[in-house]
Image 1 (tube, rainbow, N blue to C red):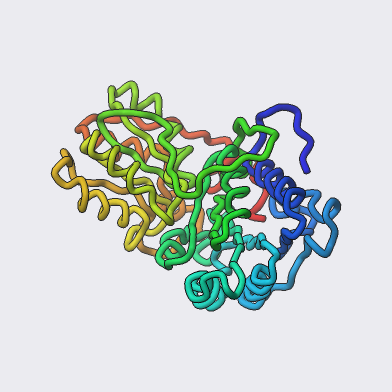
Image 2 (spheres, rainbow, N blue to C red):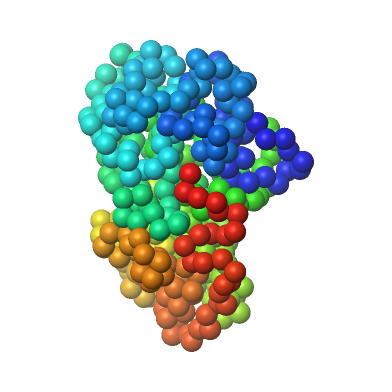
Length: 355
């Protein structure tokens, strides 16, 4: 486990701390995954685990996603809570037979009479270094389609620690989505273990003019333009979604009824997306309250490009969000100045590679 100097730690350190604390708390908890014990320890998220808890509870595995997910299911049914880690959500699609036909349905089919599926599956998403169409997809909408799964997508160090601890204690299977660009972000995190509600979104800023709902890396992109929006006298309400399944419908509906406007910032593809579901919800329950048509920001319905020249125009950033929100209020906008010391396909100079 990382040695703390104060209460401000990184996103990846918070993940590591949660795993350590939960493995101490629950002696039956097992964690495994491809690369879990390699030198980089999955961005450092599994640092120190095998040294502290041993190879019987922490172990590396071969590349066989479907089989290993089945092993995880069997372990959990035998009474061992399981934390699986996959370095890329894209490759976990190979395990959909186990996930959709067994894991998501087991608790419903047998009502606890044949074991409880207490399994949390860490899936890393996000781009960087030209990873392209098969290595950088944001697939939260796919997982959210299936009953029986919880799908969470934390964005702050505080929330990722509490949400992971909550997931590891939950009797339901949890898809735990981590954007690799968030790993070096810092924030206040208590040393003690604590839980964060798996079903509740967070209102990060109260406002009356427009509801802005963000997912994953879109949350810090929006925070980058707080001052710009405030200078334009746009009193926005910011909701960090956190839970894609189940949706915190009450928080969304109450906010839109108050503001009358909504924009959804989603890292996934546009069609059949989380943003689509939220806008459908708003049209169903808040239609009479709307002062402007719902707006969303997604990546386009084409596979992610690999080339440096194309990625520049594919992904959305703070400037795109600023322009979209400003247009709702018919306000002109001045774009943020870019940091040309690092190129656009990495989050900062700390990012040394996709693993």
